[in-house]
Amino acid sequence: MAHPHLSPMLDTTWHALLNGLLNDELNELRQHRQGFLLRVGKHSGAESVTLNGVRDIKILGKQGEPPSYRPETTEKRFASQTKRAESGLLPFGWVWVESCDDSYQHVSRSFRDKLQPHASKVREAQRERLQHLDEARQIRVLAALQVKQQRQQDEAEARQQADAEAARQLALADMLQEWAGKLMALDAKDLRKQLKLAALRGQV
Image (cartoon, rainbow, N blue to C red):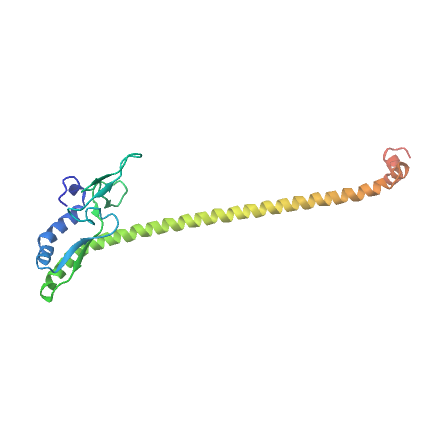
């Protein structure tokens, strides 16, 4: 939140809310050891999940160059509504681990009440995003199924046409074979008589 370049990129509502909480409820709870802030999970940043003084973060160089090791990272990752957002960003992985005595429960409730509206908006936005992703996935699955069914139908029709053509060819071959046998058994004179070629030529 104090980073000179990244701080202006953070979600302004979240930034103001957390500033107030850190100066008020969270400050009181932390001072009286009623809980602590912890950063966990992927994209939390190597600085947040390593120890000061012994931190040695591996920084990958260009392809073919050896990596370097530093006590600080060269990049930060944030959550956003779009892939290329440069504002309205939120950090990953911050959790409040609470262990409040009864005398501090009212402070904890105040903290949760102030955080709840913003957290609800974030959760609702995430729910809508996941719903849109699920709907898009279902549309892709349905489209792929329709393409598959159409391909199967086309292949079945092609097989039917091929089978029908093969059956016609076979029937023609059988007929030719039958007639060839009959024709081969006749001599030319008998063949002319059976075919009545003379009558057809007007030579009767």
